[in-house]
Length: 285
Image (cartoon, helix red, strand yellow):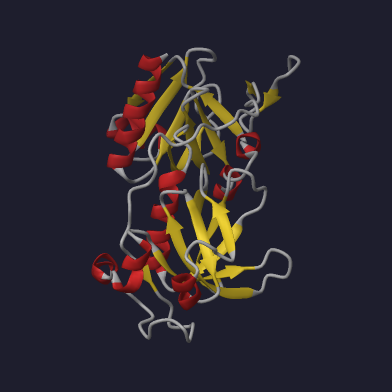
């Protein structure tokens, strides 16, 4: 390989992504009026599981914080892995998570939280832990995830959605795919997590979703697909099944290499989103 080039898992050469600084979101996340509580915490509400209807309707005393998402979560210690229940308030104006030991403390000292987690360019990934419905929070400066445990899956998804409003706009779109690469797209299928990066006009793919978080996430990629100048198409169902053994497949062919990448998943709407976003990057170039 030429100097400065690396090899992806498909054996192709690609240029490593530079340590670029992610730009701030153009607009901060919209406000939330959701109060999340955990029955496992004696200081919280007695309801342990909330439906989406309850989530959308519940405001409670959260109004005293303005329109911010709030509630008890368990936070996992990085050093010893112990769980501590804390009261969280998502401060949209400051793009941060503010933490107190008790909700009552937050009411008394709203401007003096015990701990602050910056959310600018942060990303949150759902992750099922033995302790419950967890998620991993990566800030722009962190190299390790901060683990939070929500009371249930509905609460977990609500927190992840709220936090991800602050992720870098450079992350255009991201999701899981099965990938098949190689010169003629004849390599084995592998499940990978894909992130499209606007500034460098590439699609990065990762073995683990957690590798796509943290301060140096772009350097963790297994490989990349250059979409600066490429063709993309939705493969005909009959062709896809006969040739690739999959029903829903998109084909991406970078002009720089003419290697074919096949990406497959079972959600046609998600495939259509990716095709549209790739075409926008090509036109934008």
